[in-house]
Length: 132
Image 1: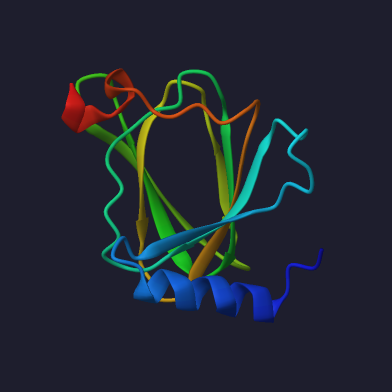
Image 2 (image 1 turned 30 degrees about the vertical axis):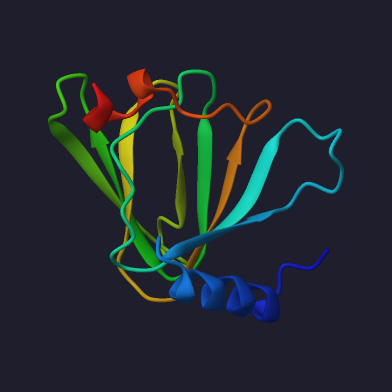
């Protein structure tokens, strides 16, 4: 599988017409692959809640565009914001297991590569800040 401009453009077009203003593209080549590897097209204005992953570290790399990862403490207070831009000095980051965070898209056409360890586990109410 090639991750090329045509694939990124296709996922971006789907994100732009989605009510959520984002679209995932699964990169696993088999249902037996229990990891999480995906492209995520994110348009400005997409709503991602403050959340955490209790069972996995999250790796993000910006393939195209510009976004910012906001990091929060256990009281919901912003402690850091990391700007990531494709081709920049900081094109990605690793979010530690259990770290509260929220990603914000700053540029139309932004696509990230997102990877997590282990099989997909839906976020429970204890892992979404506004559900607490």
